[in-house]
Image (cartoon, rainbow over the protein chains, first blue to last red):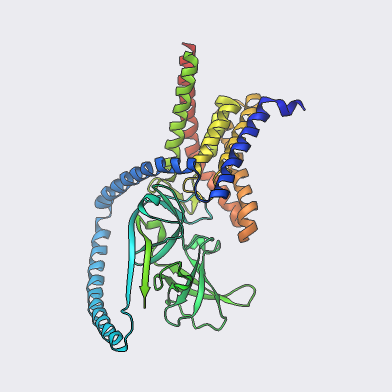
Length: 277
Length: 172
């Protein structure tokens, strides 16, 4: 009985009670508690400052030591840009023809309107089993839990937690991420989800595909838009392989994300969207 | 009164060190990731405080460290605060009786704390919900411990420097 009245026991009991109050607050009210929000509001600008300094140092280093590789990359990108400009001309012609045809048929004009917020990545999520990062904007900027996170190439994740001036993002590689998807070529529906087995390779899986699905390496995968959670037609990645599940009832595709996620420095958050196809 | 004021300043110094360590460990550009392994020196910080300041200082700073670690972590708020708070208190009680204030003691306790945290996380979450393979989990845990050792030594020396600075002040 003496032990229950000892100072160390009462101290530990105090810690347990305080932690339970915090956990209970999160369970009752959702989202980060007041203390976490304040800490995040303090830490995020400091992390942003440190990231800015390391980016500056990395650019200086790159200028001196990676000049030749930067030259090669510049030449390659110029060639790619020329090809993309030709594609854009064809795209604009097709767009114009599409608009005319829609008008003839009396259909609503195809458009996609996104309300975007530009954000910088300030830190990576802790843990070898998770894939995510923290960005420098939060509820003050109109960001909400569940908002889609994209780059110019496509979707890379969603907002999992929002503080006043920071938000936590879980990427498409994370095990808790599930996104309704379709194969662009065949319109086969599936679910994109993270996998602990594929995470070390920087890939994720496209699950619930029939065993006889027409899937080829190189097939693009995009968001289906079903459920209205995420905009339709955002590129998620490219198929690398098509394999049967261990239970044999269905198969899955191994998908590579649109960009190498560890190289990202900034992203866009889609605060609201309207897609008409 | 002067001693009390010194203690406040000392714990402010520890808190600033904790903040600096956390930011350097987590910020993009300074958070090193070697072969998918991640650095985590917060457990080493808490046990080093336990070695030098005893159970109550370590428990308090451990609780604060746990709250700080929930920023940018998928772990629910309060869990890490509970873990580091209790860890700091228990390590402080153990260290007062059985351990000396030297680097190997800090590294040993820190490794133990990291392993316990990793095993608990694996058993109660990743194995339970995602069937994470045990072999890979063990390798990742050992790897994370290995890459954290060198920075943990730096943290030990920083905490010791703060402790000795204020111990000299108290003696004066």
